[in-house]
Image: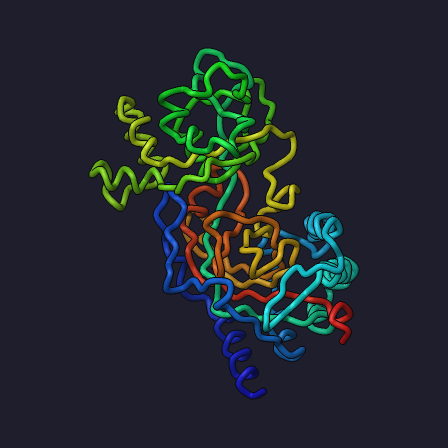
Length: 387
């Protein structure tokens, strides 16, 4: 196994270097997939690391890079994953491939093993190498990020709050073609049907909330509700920044949300016509909890990640190493720690990941600028594998 050893030591050495920054993606839209970096699930591969190699990687973990003070803070998101996995048929396959096949029972045992280890990991993270087999994913996934925007909204129509946020039409599955953006926003086909769950101050905020799949609604009385993804019409997505650029309205260097919003505030007569070029439309439901992922459980900032479930099963434990921008002040955050596969996305296919950064304006800038490769390892307990 000398080739594996050389590769592992090379990875460890590269991780120790503080250089470069995340590639910038087009702000204001979901990033375009870089097909040269992304392999379909069937073309990706897993390679088992030795204990020596995984110990070298675990020594470099820095959970403070995820905003955590102790490994015990992983327990809540781990239990979110565990509750989902417990609901799956334990003898059924979570993933079945030539290089790795795992049942839901083995994923469950891995989550339980990780929860049991948490009290010891602050002192000795190398225990992860002793108790888990690390499966390295190749090629390195292209990683982007998403967040939960904050939107000023009211639960009833009132002056200043004119733009409806819609719940899911009962006939959405049968009549998706009826509910493209032009029909909903301009022809008002849903008006008066009682599907409005809230009204927003800004129509562009609603558009970007649909891009991210959720939004935190800041109500006039100070209360907060969360608009959670309820369904979509299935039409192909096109970013508003890209639409503005294609129409010659904004240069490529100014496609961020603020520039788009400023332009449309100056030219409101163009707003709905431009937005209608993105036929995709997302519907929501209200919740008192935070943004939820595909598990139906709250997402955890800098821990939750969206994956292609054909390659990385929901609920899986991942060790990840990647770089993300810190924010407008500059600098790079080197994330090295445990992440959890807790979400999916229509654009997340094969070796493509979407990393959840959190809520509000403080993470928006960084979320639009993550587009870089990540090192990813799936961790499965040795006991689950009978080793």
